[in-house]
Image 1 (cartoon, helix red, strand yellow):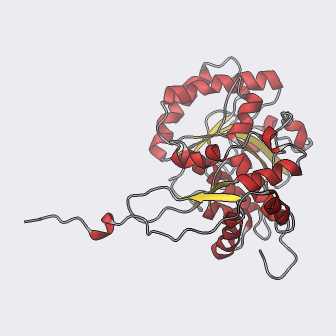
Image 2 (cartoon, rainbow, N blue to C red):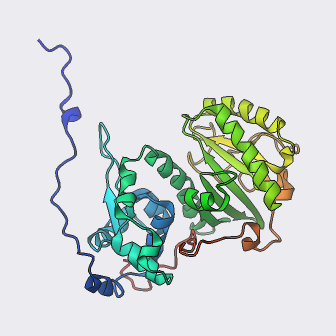
Image 3 (tube, rainbow, N blue to C red):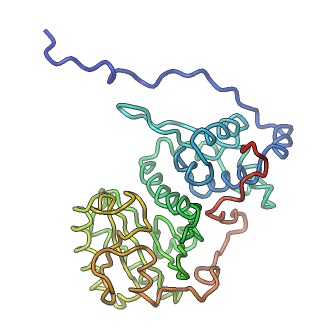
Length: 346
């Protein structure tokens, strides 16, 4: 007699789907794409090349008015081999669709920037291989941090704007001999500008290892003469509390701790409007001058705590020069181009 039967829904896998016909990546197909791809399509392909993978919801936050509009256009881009897609396995429910750059998209980007596609180093196996990567959830989490800022930047009457967003790979190419942050960003709001490196913690890394990363940031600040705050995002408030002690101890061992301003936040901070909104009052500095207001600070308010990191009077490109490799694509603007003028939004 079965006393605890397994629910039927847990035995169901993903529903089988009919294969969607896709174009062959021939020269004729690439020629046809020249008249089909909009500025937004090309921008999205560049974002996928830079940041590796984006979910449907993240793409909606980036450049579409609704999930329905995004799915309609993404299906076309999938058929045209501009993007590829996959769904990670989950034990119950259905995971969101994940999108990566496909062959036709990579070819169009290469020629757009004046490269031979072979120089780009793109391989479809590598692009779609992230579906099996143990870092998939981490990459999606980092990208979600920034797509939220992009969505905030595009709201009517928005006070802030994301001016730069570099991927872990780009940061590694520029600073990898000293430190490898998960991302770099630049946020502008109310006439102030703050640059930051993001360390996205998933609760799996040893806290001692996390603290030792601050030595690399001190080395980078000394070499470049630029003080860039380090923002550390944790999954829980408990993990944040434990990590803050390790980070404070690591800062005390630096020769010049003022060169490494650090602030932390957690996904479950109590009393925060917008659970995953990085711009609201959720950041708790570890060191610095006393704050004008106790408690957690908004992202832009960190410039008041650390006035030496506010580069409001400087040109944006002067903060961190983009030292591109000969066959490296230009970093995309984090905000999408203007919507098509037609009343039928594609």
